[in-house]
Amino acid sequence: MKRNIKYFLFLSVLIFAIFSNTKIFAEEFWDIPAKQIVKSATGAKIVSDTAGKNVYVAYACISMNIKKSSDYGKTFSSSSQLGSGVGLPNISTNDTGEYVYVIWVEDKKLFSSASSDNGGSFIDPIELYTCDIESFITETNI
Picture 1 (cartoon, rainbow, N blue to C red):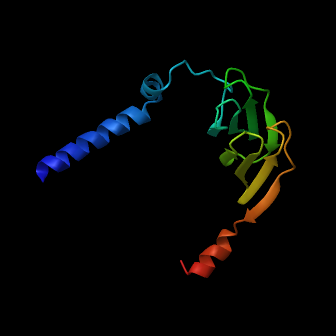
Picture 2: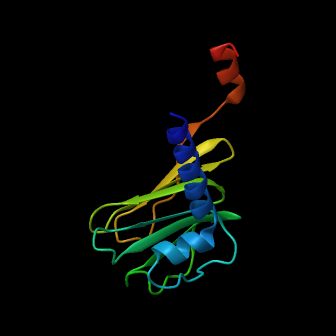
């Protein structure tokens, strides 16, 4: 039993060391050098179609932005601003990359935007939810 615990701890530390150091992770798992496409961003998320041809990156840098590539990630478009929020972006697409969906947080509100033309244009952001923390605390009796 002690041996199993030591083995588990060793593997946990090893996995943490590999994945917490982005340089080790990149050198181990990427075949080609990664390109920097923005200078500063938080919460960047990346998604591609099934073939990998259409690649989309959602990120926050003062505002919610998206970049797209239609050549397997070799080059990326200029940033398209979707909203002023900067929190917790997430992005999804279908198998062909034709439809792209983005959600993010902006001032305690959850917003969404979508594209039906391979990320060429996006609809105006739609507010999906507003979090009223004071009501939440009262309702749950915390």
